[in-house]
Length: 323
Image (cartoon, rainbow, N blue to C red):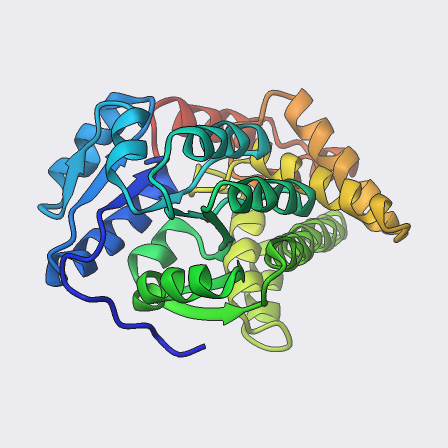
């Protein structure tokens, strides 16, 4: 799909969910919309997040309530934590949103949820586009996103016209659930990489070989790529400060993968292991660490003392330090 061109002043844009990830996305969209003279209204239940976002960009305006978003916006982007939140916001847009409006959901949710909501939007002359993204917040800020969009033709064209300015857009056609499937496949592979790296580092350490030097060699030779470099460094140095994707969100996603696999009778035994791994790490009180923190649990299972590392990371998290 080529980049669509928008006419100046054609839309009022809304953005719902101004967290660590959403704020970067909203900023990029607002800067692009400045040139087209399109106002961007931002909303979050946390008013402090809205105030911070608005102060960072002269292209954003604060929406006091969801009612403002529903009544004023022609296209609404959202970045929300789970299916429940996406469903709640979508139901408000379905019931109270402007006739003909488009909701571009960038969240990682079940394809079942996307398909159901798409039908509900369509029934009231509105459109849902699923547009999950591969990028961490720092990548969003650098406009290094990969967007996977799916939904009705006109909705995909509209979504692409905004999202293509902050990265690559890949079109998966009319089935909204398709892009969610791709996102879950990718997140499963990232989580699997973190587990594999963690086990390898434990193996090296228990045999007296420096884990950091091992990972540095691997990530600059046979595994010279973004995921192995980024998460390999985090696991080997045991740096699990928040970086935009918490361990609790990781647990949510591997559970989604597991549920989606069961719906299609696809055996994924390693995914079952990941569900248990993330559940165990969360039970140890690490849900607010970066999801790479499952590496701590792998080390503990190998009898490695990580108490000092856990304490250091907890101190970093408690004082709001980020990666």
